[in-house]
Image (cartoon, rainbow, N blue to C red; front, side):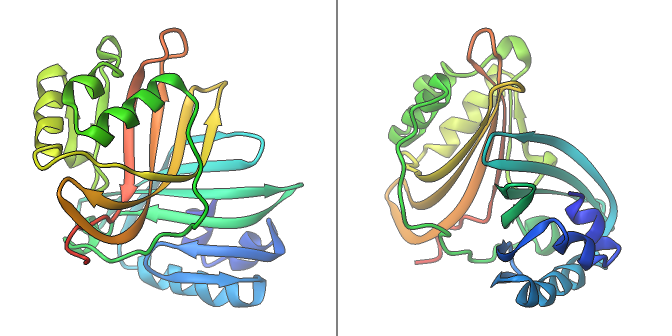
Length: 249
């Protein structure tokens, strides 16, 4: 489904044709709804939110597993900033029963908007191995352990939620980034759902963040995506989509 492209064209019926009658929507900033009737109003709100902002839309990556389809967009804004946006679609036969979007609002507003956690049930991540190791590293705030999971031979990068202007590369650059990231301690994320495309070697984990170092704050939703070298298992790229702000207490 070409979600953002159809939103741009205000072709809501085409979007709804891919969805089940009781579809659940949860769209960054614009809200949530259940069912097609309520969904139309939400899709119109999404179009209104973005209509004066978008200059160009490109699909960065698509991947899937048995239960989900994920579409990552790179959206060029009229203010010349980029807006990374990801769509999560939950499969139900030949349609989708849920549609969630994640993106930072910083490229549009240069600020943050609170978004509460979307889930209550927790899961334990057991795969892929180096991604699990990565999360163990960031949980305890260890730059050394985190760096061990990265594939520098593949020019690994870490792109922050606010876009490619905040993209960290090279061993030196990533070390500086994680040292800053962990300056006040680790970031123990709580996971609720994941998507693993073993053919492409891409993992996505939907999480809640409510602790960062010594700070505790209102639970906030996010997702991070990891490309993996299928031979070594090491991480080759990290892309984060959230609006997490520790000031929401």
